[in-house]
Amino acid sequence: MSNQKLMVLIVEDEPLIAEGIKLHLSGSSFVVSCMAYDPDDAIQAIQSNDLDIAILDINLEADKDGIDIAKYILANNPFPFIYLTSYSDSHTMERAKETSPAGFIVKPFNKKTLLATLEIAVNNFAQHNKQHVPDLSVGKINQQIASPLSEREFELLQLIYEGKNNKEICDLLFIAMNTVKRHVTNIYFKLDVKSRTEAIKIARNLMLK
Image (tube, rainbow, N blue to C red; front, side):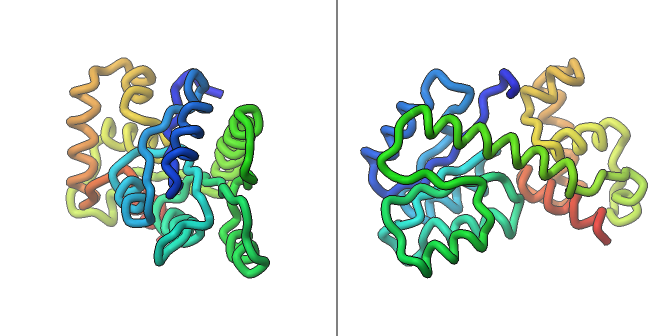
């Protein structure tokens, strides 16, 4: 795995368990980007952050559960997620399986199990994406947008599409963070989007037309 820390979303309505997961991840290649205690907070976190993986408690004390959050992830910019559960009826488990999670963790669990599950999930998702995500074409994208991307902007869009964050883009292209941010802002404007999630989704959709 890369030396770059991987951003994790924890969706768990029991704060003690959420904090326990965060503690397990400390010092590992994963870092908790945000914690959500209910579905609405989870959706907002997904929209506002560049995430690498989510840990979703299936059984949330709310009108939506972890499976509903997973469906939101799949409908927008898909990234890997694993389910956390202590009990579930057969109907709930069937619903969970239909979303093709990257893994399950059953409470109680230990640090070793958590880290192994996360690492396998991220690696498997990356391999799956290489096989199923269409390559980007600057010509095809520029034919469908009002203001064409420059060569450099397309280069950054490709890296965003591959899941690279701003720091990784800086390191790969040997450019300053402010330069990356300026290019990203221009890309968002030209694609008429407001986030990385939307940019990836639009780029993928343009390639499938």
